[in-house]
Length: 507
Image 1 (cartoon, helix red, strand yellow):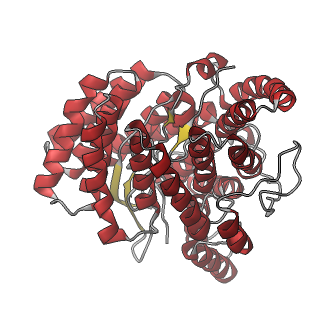
Image 2: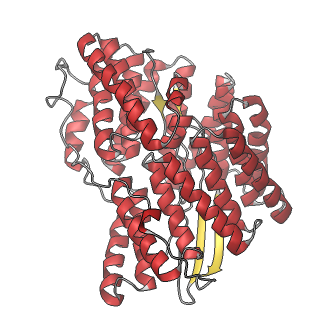
């Protein structure tokens, strides 16, 4: 096995597996929820079921006994980890708690079959997913989708939006083939109800293209994204927000198939237009700085990239130091610092990111797992091999609990853990886990619905994350859908503005 270190910035198993990254999608819709309904019968088998049971996560410290014999050496961050241990896994995002309370109150007042309860259930599932608890969100989405099909029929906008969110959760869980199938159903349903050039249809087309990239079907994805750009430009013009998201996504797709130089003009164009239209201090402009820096880094222009990343970090002035998006930018900045030969300086940055992830999101969050992995890689790059092993182990074992053993991201964590064991000289353990890795590759390929050969083409350094987002369903007063979603998937990041997927926020 190659002695590779995988640096992960944000989690999106889809991008992780197929190594693609998307920059942004936007959704803006205002549609009557009583739109055309049909009495289409749908069999129970039409709804994909996956195992949503989750193992209880460990809240142990790094030095707790594990399956391997790790020397008990002093760890440079053990003190702050001890101070934070009581917070591990206990952080609940306020919005998720509010949505749960709202759902329970609505259900008690109106009953489980009421449209308002359905909308609240969807919003609750979305908030849970955004909190990193994807496994928990799956049965909630399934419940909402079944109810909507029963009440509204399959060819209904609310049903399709909930299906979109369910597909996104499946994508997060690593069930790539199933996710793509549902995204395609949503796209075809929107075409039938709204037409090919409707804004919502174009967003659904973008989501389907993202899933195709995750499956390695790049040519098909590029063709769809090109069509989205054509329609967006004709409808709203080149400088429209939605058109810029489409251009950004297309640039990401080009880069993901190795056409890095061809993608550069698109990144440059999006950045320049956003600076002109939105100004230097807008969140989307900062995201474009980050994306432009990323592509410069890919071209080996590390000094130029660093200037762009530094510009992107100024986003802290509008969102603060603890916002997930700022932490994403910090991570990209740190990776580029390593490319400039600043391995010692960057160690403190990764340590800070890990500490903030633990404080803000808790231990059992996908982004925190990435922070563990990246801190381990930084330790290893500084030849602190024994110190790195417990952090690699932590990311892998928590990955099994949080994401599941069949998730592609967990596979990445295991591969990194094996590389860490090998570097530290734990030969027997390295060989034992290597056998486990080979079996997991086959299992994950079957679960995700992909060719296992994709695992042989992983890069040595960076894994990128992207994910389409949830559609926001909102129904108030006149029962209208409103959704504003920006799937701004930063290169090598799951960075997002407002929402990270077309999210259905119903109320």
